[in-house]
Image 1 (cartoon, rainbow, N blue to C red):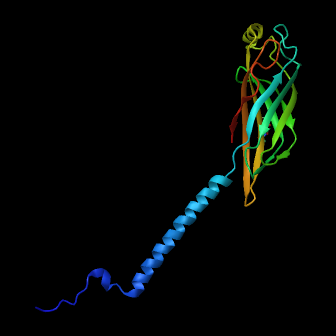
Image 2 (image 1 turned 135 degrees about the vertical axis):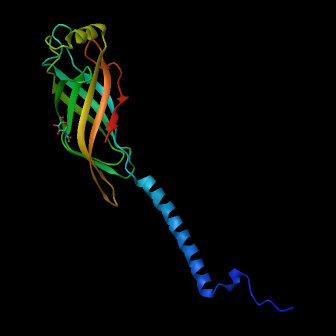
Image 3 (image 1 turned 120 degrees about the vertical axis):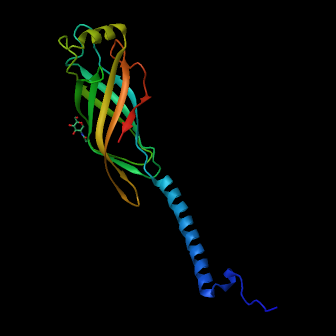
Length: 201
Ligand SMILES: *[C@@H]1O[C@H](CO)[C@@H](O)[C@H](O)[C@H]1NC(C)=O
């Protein structure tokens, strides 16, 4: 019986090929581990949006005979930076107050540009002047009856441009919109304080 000198396939691979296979496996493992490290870094370093809550809102002397026109509109929105290491540059903040979802009754600048350090808080205080509703507006009847009933539904929208300050890289600008829905009592004061606002980027 002739001796079979043929070896199985894998034993025939030259040492060079086997070395290459080993290097490939090591390289793939390194790439995999590096990927996991980058993912974890990204999770812990990625910026979180600032948080907002409507702390206070008042239109003193609002009433069902003359409405709100020309009355001062005062509010405080608490801003909080939830990031451990990332600061936030805010551009000027602009405020708009709506009745009936889209009837603009007051608007104007609310805050100068500011820098919010990591974990920082800032009460953003605004004072605007109401332009309505007035008795000639289509929404007037509803407004007057809501004031009489002691619950007027309104919205405060803040807009600005923000930029995150990350140590390793600089991020681009984001247009930001903060939307706070709330109810005003018949005496012109906020019914439920400190409700969180929605933030849109
Ligand atoms: C905020 O909104 C006002 C009114 O709509 C607009 O004039 C202003 O340019 C806006 N600001 C930013 C930063 O988008």
